[in-house]
Length: 218
Image (tube, rainbow, N blue to C red; front, side, top):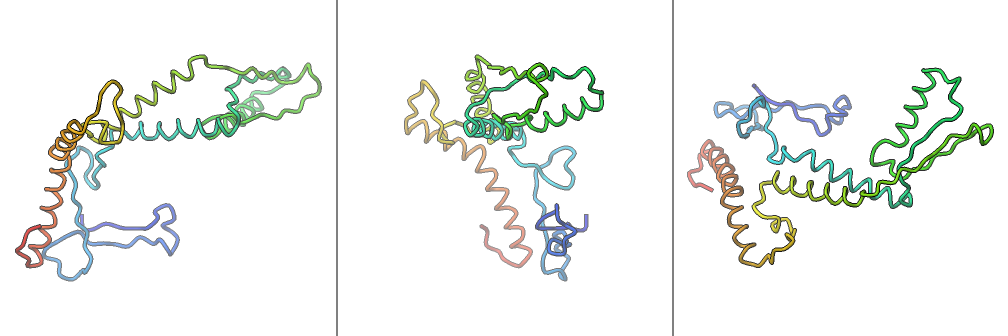
C-alpha cells in the first residue's frame, strides 16, 4: 500500500470540488511529501485496508433505535393511525402486471418507519367496488416496544463496552446506584477500555515524535 485517496464526499467524487487527493502512506524514509497518512488499526480478519469501529457489534441495534424512534414520531404526527389490511374488491379483471404495480405503489407508501400512520385516498366506481381497509390493532404493541427498547439499550451499552449502564446516564431498576458504584464502574471502564486505547494513541504519537527528532514522550 503506497498511499490513500481522500475525498470530502465520496458520493460526489466526480465533482471537482470533491476530487480525491492522494496522500502517501507514513514512511520514515519519505522526506518529499509534506503530508503523510498513518493508518493505526487493531487486527481484525478480512480488514486489510481499514479498521472497524469498536461499536461494530451494535450497529444493527443503533439503526433499530433510530427506526423505533422515527416510527413513533411519525405515528404521533399522523394521529396514531394503526396498520391496515387493504383489499381491492374490483380485482377480478386486474392483470398480474397491474397487481405488481399496485403492490409496489402501496409498499412504497406504507413500508418503513417514515410512513407510519399515513392515510390512503381511493377513487371507486361505487361502494361495491370500493377497496376494503381493515385496521390491524396489535394488542401487545406497547409490550413489543418496551421489549425492543430494552434490547436495543442493552446491545448499545454492551457494544460500547460500558461496564455499567450508569456510565451512559441510565439507572438500573431495583438498584440504588450510589456514588460508590458509579466510581467503581468508571474506574473499571477506564482500566479495561480507555486505558489501553490511550496507550495505543500515546505510542503512535511517540513514534512520530521520534521520527522528527524529539526525545520527550507524551
